Length: 212
Ligand SMILES: C[S@@+](CC[C@H](N)C(=O)[O-])C[C@H]1O[C@@H](n2cnc3c(N)ncnc32)[C@H](O)[C@@H]1O
Image 1 (tube, rainbow, N blue to C red):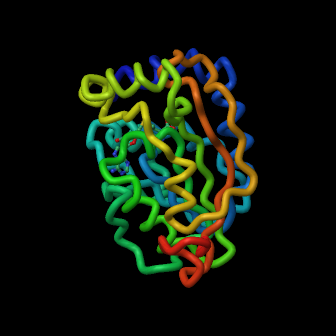
Image 2: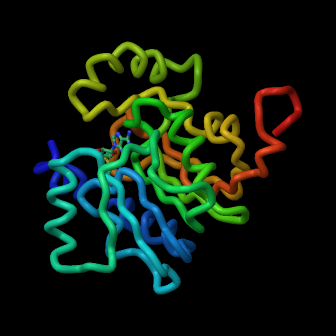
């Protein structure tokens, strides 16, 4: 899959995904951590205000392509850590980026808790993700039905992921967040959200009613 990935995504990139990436990454600044960087689709889009760029990619095949694209660049750090276990002290980054990643992570709540932990106060989480169709729709039923097979065929990609509510439960404030059909996508992966999330101070998070 990793070798085919860029070719597979080219239609979506041309149909608008590349423009979405560019717009999203415009606000990346300071020390930046990108999770599940894949084959480096965002690499050329980071603006000048980025002082440090760390790319994490647990899949070794994806990582090999990423390393090849980076070539001799020594200003970018690459590591294999999964989003659920980030090897950084708390408040290490100004910006964390995830594009089309949270659908694939094994434990999204844990990954979001890690992102919250490594972000500095006032930092930003920039995300672009496909999410499950609204509950009760035929598309959602089809997604639920196909998901066990889909995850095996598509690198653990989950069709029904509720990334918006998961972000809020992890202590993030979404501002702003755009919901639009994913460019060049099928109905099954067509609903997407993208935008900026800010970590709320830890004391305001948690599961008690009215605490977020
Ligand atoms: C659909 S690809 C997206 C790649 C890239 N971010 C992009 O925008 O093109 C999903 C990526 O998430 C990575 N991934 C899967 N599980 C992960 C995890 N637990 N932590 C971090 N990345 C993960 C995969 O290896 C893969 O590179």
